[in-house]
Length: 309
Image (cartoon, rainbow, N blue to C red; front, side, top):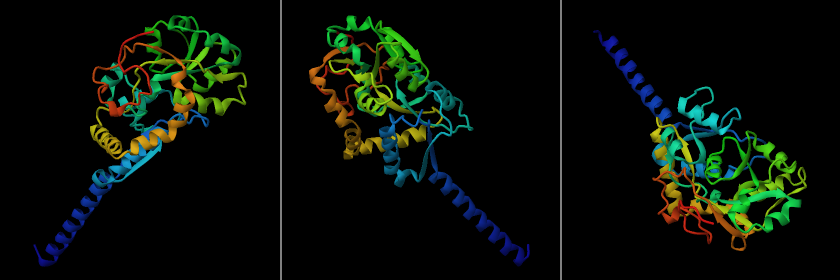
């Protein structure tokens, strides 16, 4: 090999090495996280979760590199989003969802077992029609409540919890349609987390002036809400779990939690409500119920998986 050829070969070899290093760096730095697009322009239920996710990713940049966080191009049901992650559909690109856990969910997808709302979604108050206020205020036990019908999304995880506890359920696949159905008297009450009921009511009170937030009852069941990713993506799960743990340790997690939910917790007046507890048959045995710093327990019975009245 001539000197000139040796020089050219070395230049090409060096260039290839640089390109390989650059390619590896770009790929390592570009963690792409795509979550399901919100269901409507009035759907602000998950703003807190996106802020938690973004902060967790921010905190892990020094170790894991840069990231891109974006919603999916299309709106889809929870069941569709789950299926997209399981099959790894490149068209939608969804690789993360947030939803309640269950034994089946944790078999299908990889859970990050840090309850994103500290269990708050298990504290349920109701949207009702104003004309039914007295009827609800006179309910004294859970069996009386079971005689009324509850509205639920058709693909929501806690439908099975209500079914297992003997409730009458009216379900529909559209989140927005549930408010119209309640207003029209197609079921008796819409069960909402205490963090959901008030903003949902404020957002829609002009459209549905006959609705209000019920003031005397609270339904409770252990209902952790997690981030989930594909079982083929453990590195993303590890990164998010590390970021969330860092947030719990430095207090950032609680700052975001109370930023979004403190007002609703106070407004709900939990101490002035009659509390009925439900059994959750879907709760996996791995649920970290004993780790008290993961949960917010505002004067209710200890978090457990037992039914009571």
